Image 1 (tube, helix red, strand yellow):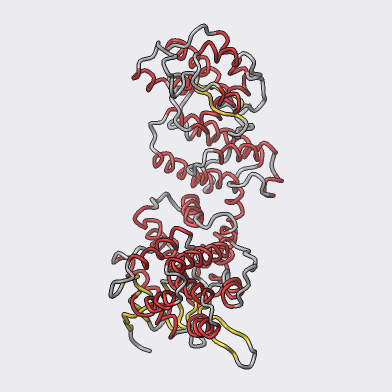
Image 2 (spheres, rainbow, N blue to C red):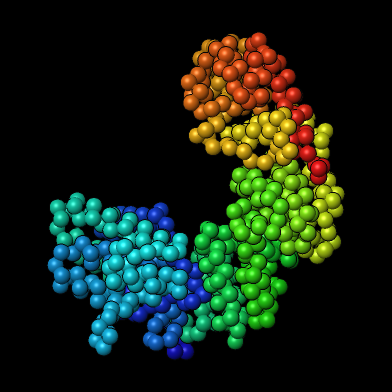
Length: 552
C-alpha cells in the first residue's frame, strides 16, 4: 500500500471485516463507567437517526494481516464489548455463535481454539481473551486496565439487559442494536502505509482539533524518533506504564512533567507545552532511549513520594515516612519535583531536614496565600533543577534559596491570626498539630489520627445558630463561622449531639475533653467576636513553633 486511504463506514462493519491489533506502545484500556455510559446513551438517543458519527479511527498495516490501531482503541474495544453483551443475551445458540464468530473471534480448525479478532495491548490482551472470548466471568483482573475492561463489560451488559426488558424481552431489539453498530454508528477510517506516517497523522489530527491525550502525543513522538531502537524504547515505556498503573494511570503525565522540571526546565502543562518542549529537545534515537530509560529507572523514587509505606523509605529515618504521609494528606503536587530532586541528591540526614521544612512551607503558604499555585510550582521546579545540577547541596542552602517566597514568622503569625479555613480536613490538621505542640510532642506537625469518623471539626459558633448566638449579625456569622479561632476538635458522636446548642451548654461538654485545644474553652464566659479573635491570636503564636523554619 502506497497511499493514505479513507473510508466512511459503520464501526461494526470495521470490526467485522478486519483483524485489529493495539500496538505494543499504546496505553492500556482506560475508559471508565462514565465514558461507557456516554457511549450507550449516545447510541440510545440517536437510535432512530440515519447515522451517528463516532469520530476518526487511524489504522496502519501491521504484521500477520492485522491492522494496527494508531488512534481509536478505546472506542473499538468498547463497541466490541457491546457485541459481547448482545451475544451473551441472545438465547438461541446459533444466533449467539453468529455474533461470536463474525465480530469477536476467529476459529482455528487445527488448534480448536477461538482467537480474538481484536488483539489488545500486552497489558490487557490475555484478560480480554479470557473474559470475552473464553467467557470466563471469574477472570482475574491483575491491572487497573483489566478492572476497567471488566467494569465496562458489566455496565454494558446491565444497560442492554434493561433495554431488552423494556421491549418485553423481544430479542429483535438486540438485532436492532447490532444493525445500528454495523451500519449507522459511523467512523472515518484513515489507513496509513507505515508506522512513521501513522505518527505524523496522529499529530496532525491533534493539530486540527481532535482531542488527543498529551501522553499519547509524547509517546507516539518518542516512538517515531526511536528508529532501530524502537523495541528497547517500547519495553522501557511498557515497564514504566505498568508501574504507574498499579498506582493511578493518570499519574503518567504528571510524572513526566515533574521529571522534566527536575532534569530540564519548568514548562506549563496546558496547550501541550510539555509535548512541544520534548519535541524541541529530544531529537534522535539515542536521546529518546536515554530519556525513556531514565523515566523508567526513576519512577520508583517518584512513587515513593506518594506512598509512605514504600520499601524505599527503609533506608531513611522513620520521620521521613511521617513527613511524606503528612504531605500527601493535603493532596497537592507542587512540592513533588522538589522532593524528587532531594531524594536523588541529598544525604539521608539532609532529606529529613528538607522534608520537615517542606511541611512547614506548605502550611505557611496555605495560610498566607497570595502566591498562586503556578508561581509556587515554578519556584519549586527551579529549585529542584538547581538541586539536580548540584547548585543547592543541602537543606540549609535550600531554605536560604526560598526565603523570599516562604512566609516568614511575622507574616505567618499575622495571617494565621485572621485566617478562615473552608476545607474541614485542613482545619482538623491545623488544630491537631497545634494540640500536639501544646502537649510537648517532639514533632507536632506530623499527622495524627484525623479520621473524621473518630475526630470531627467543631464550629463553636455553629453553621445554624438558631438564635442561640445573638452577639452575631448574619453578616458577622458569615465572616467568623470558619475562622480558625472558632474551630476545635471533638469526638464525632459528641459533636453530632449538640451542633447548634448555645455556648453555655457546649462549654460543659468542652470541659470534659482530654484535648487542650477544646478543654481550654472553659476559660471563656461567652462566645463573641472578641473571644474568637483572642483565641485565634493564641493559636497563631503556637502555630509559629508548630510549623517552625528551624531544623531542630
